[in-house]
Amino acid sequence: MMHGDTLIRISLNALGQNMDMLRQLMGPEVAVMAVIKANGYGHGATEIAPTLLQHGACYLAVARLEEALPLRKAYPDAPLFVLGHTPDRLLECAALNRITLTVFSVHQATLLNAIGEKNGIRPTVHLKAETGFNRLGTDDLEEMKSILRLPHLYVEGIYSHLALKDRPSDELQLNRFLSIVDALENEGHFFRHKHIADSISCVDYPDFRLNMVRPGALLYGMKGFESDALSPIPALSMETRITRLRRLAPGEGVGYDLSWQAQRPSVIATLPFGYGDGYPRTLGGSGYVTIRGIKCPLVGVMCMDQCVADVTEVPGVQVGDLAIIYGDGTRNTLSIQEAASLAGTNKNELLCRLSERPFRLYEE
Ligand SMILES: *Cc1c(COP(=O)(O)O)cnc(C)c1O
Image (tube, rainbow, N blue to C red; front, side, top):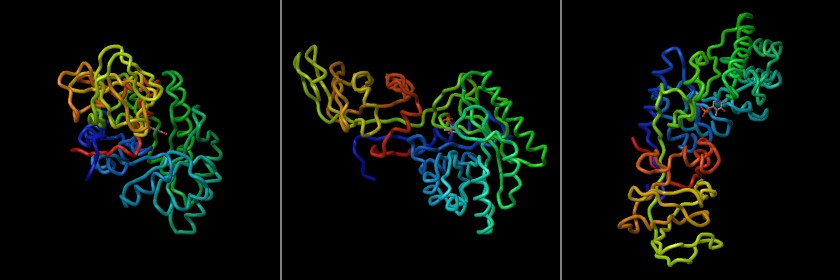
């Protein structure tokens, strides 16, 4: 496959190892729903799905049905889950494609039940319980009980999501969740999957694992949790090569508005990446790339497709030299974590804003 100089390397090996380490830590009783929404946090959902399944993911989860359908097309037998709300008009499409949905209203459960009856199938859903996040879910036990009575619907699981404010408030949510589960199980319903823990809570709170966890960030090597029980490996790096070098005399400017001016005799390098690749525009003044092991500050305004780095300090710098845009933080490279804090955002946003344009190279 042809590609230019700007590319994202994805280590399938790192993804597999992260899954293995996670499963080891969770133990055999805890299933893993691997979250690959937003194009697998920028890593490419379709491309990484087989690795995650081979390493024991029992579900692949996305946020919306339109993310699940291409996965269904590529992987006719993969267990697929939609974490978000599915509009009424798409419920039949989801059910016919055997995609497990999140349901939290009698209204949608009834529609799905009718779809099941009409097509001779049993649409599969997980109930979403409201425990305090106040985004999706229901805490109406009577409604949940009537959903469980629908004959053409398979309520395979029940779940909720944590606000992660602090341990006491997370425990309050867990306890609300468990009391909802108990109340429904006491009516004789069996939930195959019960889950409330994301990447952070599944590591830091062992008693929140129940029988399924829903990690995203962790699988990609992002460490948001505090425990040292797991050291996930970053799966993504991004790089480019120097397009042009130019010497500047003091006082010469660079880019739009000439917003940066050389203070000393300088060498600047033009690099073919910009905010059109999903790199934060605000890092124009504060980010850096790593060339020959040296941090080179980005100078001037970050453009859509290109930017400029000050490479005055790089001995022997040449056109075509490799520039690491995102690395793992070692050898003077900018980690996703550090880039996120420089850009005033979080790791997940930096990853999922990576656009389609940079070529993704998948490596074992
Ligand atoms: C995105 C998401 C997750 C995964 O979150 P991470 O912090 O990346 O582990 C889990 N559950 C739900 C409902 C989500 O939307």
